[in-house]
Image 1 (tube, rainbow, N blue to C red):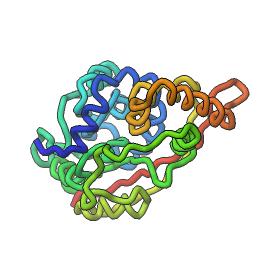
Image 2 (image 1 turned 90 degrees about the vertical axis):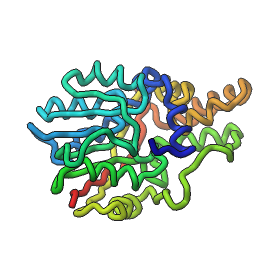
Image 3 (image 1 turned 180 degrees about the vertical axis):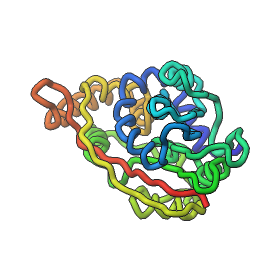
Length: 271
């Protein structure tokens, strides 16, 4: 199995956090699911591989289209929820970039907010190519940079609370990294040898309960959660105070948050 320090950090970061993710940020990541499947050409009878399935949102939607779905994830707690949410899918444990499938096993592959969590994104795309037949499609989503308001909000909160950013968190090696822009993501797919690359920006308003938006990072979800877990009680109190202050501007009359956000959706054909 091919892993890096970044991969090891990500596995530890997500260990046993499926329930916390489901109750906080899963609905945010679910928004592009239909567009992702459309970009991959998923319809009735499509043999689809959903990598990094998480709680199974994309897999379940693909099953509702009568696709033949295989879904994988590296985190056992995610697989438990994925099997519950997508009972018609073949849900398996596997870790990117090494897939336990033969060449040309699938008509399409999708990765919803996944390649930003692997130590070698290009190698992951090459492996997806290997298991998708020629002429099949691959579609991926990532969060863009600069971050949209929903994600930028946390940086503003941490700055106001005086939170120092750690310098010791694993990062992608420079030769493995890519720009989180439309051009950067498109270039990554081209570099992996894919054809007919298309990349668009999807925008939407994420509506959520303020406590759900708070609980994701508090329970260690994502890069924000990794930073939150390092703080002492006094700093956490400051962060909570700044959260209340900064989130007020995004509250609907009913008290829920209405957070503008965006994602990059790229797709390509296998040569």
